[in-house]
Figure (cartoon, one colour):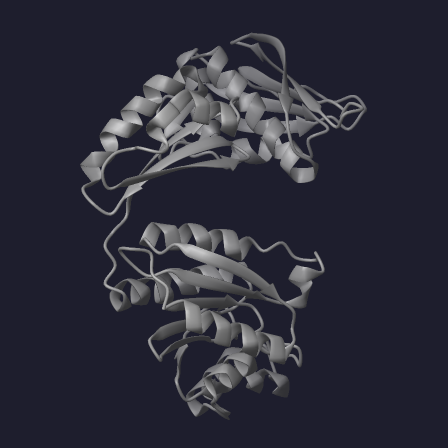
Length: 379
């Protein structure tokens, strides 16, 4: 059974033909990879599966033979193609039988909406080894199966339902079941520098971060993050984080929970700006969205809204300062550039910077590039 030195490893099965058809993006996998890492359980593989009972059963059998923790999302609905329960039962060699308590919970849930479709009773089927897990915001209960030295978890595919079940049910049980040592992490967040350039700047800090420490580089829309972690003393993180900050200099916009939008708004606040608005073109409103989601901070400029340039006469937002962002068309080589400026109570002359990616990712990176120029211009 797989382990990773100090603890267990996990495998994830993402179940649903819509994932393979490209109709749904598997955000659950990204969430669970991060959540497992915080528990100190490396996620060793992610496998997407169609709604085919035999394939699902074989995948469960294979994963359970390799890993002490197997997690599956999706396929717990009431329709004929929701076959995760059946697949796991087959892998366990068990029959599905109706659970009277689950049936009563389903009928109570649907009482407020009218008659319950009989197909929903499929969600009250349970294998003998499975403990049903409550789903307070959906009709599909989860499963917790602890058998043969392996814990197998079933969760709904709906992200809001999955995340709540993970937080309230799975994460606490997993920590208790595997007696996990807590993982401590320190993160240095940069923007405007690529992964290879960052690796070159920090030198051997990646390969030799310190005794009992590990390090990694991760690219996100809001920049490249350098992460250190340990199962030992959290104070051991201080030295590599401090060294990384010194080596990376102005490329760093924060550590740990720092958010680039909040950092930019704080920089404007220090420049005397009380309120700020946005004006953007060809970005799909991503700058507005990112700024609106920023956590308020003492002394930071307050975001009061923005406008999208639809090609006609667009009134200027009313605020002390306006962040202006234009995402330019890609060139013949597929490269993208953005133009950024700030006008009003604080001024930043127009600058042009390059961004990578395509589609929504390209738009999000344009928004973060604008915010990075703001924090640099008023730092």
